[in-house]
Length: 218
Length: 131
Image 1 (cartoon, each protein chain N blue to C red):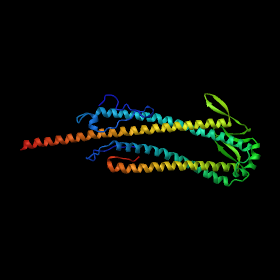
Image 2 (image 1 turned 180 degrees about the vertical axis):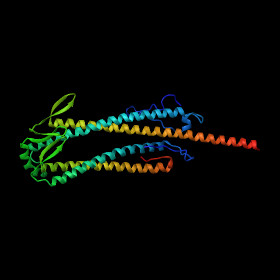
Image 3 (image 1 turned 120 degrees about the vertical axis):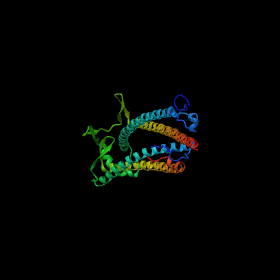
Image 4 (image 1 turned 45 degrees about the vertical axis):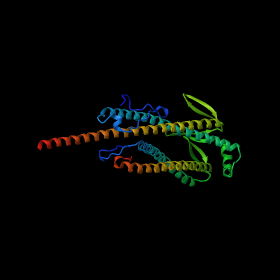
C-alpha cells in the first residue's frame, strides 16, 4: 500500500487523475491481515476530491450553457435583419418567396417597427431605419460596429466555440463520473472484504472455543 | 445513483473484474447522460407546445394584420404571412432538434438495458442499478 494518495499517476484528458482498479482486494491491502481503516480513509478522500472537481466543472458548464441562449438570441436577430435586407435587394429566390413579395415591397420601404424591453415589464416602441450595420457588445464596456454578414460570422463562431466548450466539459464530467463510480465500487469492495474477513474470524473463534469446550467437557 | 454491493448478503461473493468495472462505469455514464437528455427534451417539448399554440393563434388572425413576433428579446411588428413563414421555420428547426434528442435518448436507453441485463445476471442483488 503506497503512502500517498490512492489515485494513480496516470491522468486522463486535461489532467484529471485516473482512479485505480482493484484487481484483488487482499493484494491491494497487502495481505490477509492488513488493516482497512487507512486505505478506506484514502479512498474516501479521493472520492471527496472527485466530487469537488465534479461540482466545479458542473458550475462552469452551467455558466457556459447560460451564455449560449444569449448568443442565439442575438444571432437570430442579426440574421433577421440580414434576411430582411437581402430580401429587399434581391428579387424572389423561389416560389415561396413570391407571395411574400408584395408584403415586402410595402413593408421594407417602411422602417422596421419593434417593441423592445426598456426595463422589466416596461416596453417601448422603436423604429429601425434600414441599416447594414449592427453594434455588438463585446464586454469590458466596449461595443463595436459590424456589417451584418461580419456580425453573423462573429456570432456564429462564438456560438460554435461555446458549444465546443460545453461538449469538452461534458466529456470531462463523464470521465470524472467514471472515476467516481470506480472509487465507489472500490470502497464497497474493500469494506465488504473487511466485513467478510471479520465474519470468518468470528466463525473461526467460535469453532475453536467450541472445540476447546468440547475437549474440556470430554 | 448508488452502487453498493452488499456482498455480506450472499456468501459466494462474485469478484469484480475489469470488464465488470468498465460496464458499471459505462452504465453510470449513460445514466448521467440520460438525465441531461431528459431535461433537454422536456425543455424542447415545452417550446414546441408554445409554438403550436402560436400557430393556432395565428390562423385565427386576419390576413392583413400586423403581428408581434419575438426575435431574441425584442418583438418585431411584421405582417402575418411573414410571421407565419418564420413560425414554420422555427417549428421545423425545433422538430429536428427534438427528433435528434429523442433518438439519442432511446439509444442511451437500449444500451443501458443491455448493461442492466448483463450486470444483474452476474451480480444479482449485490448491485443496484436504479436511480
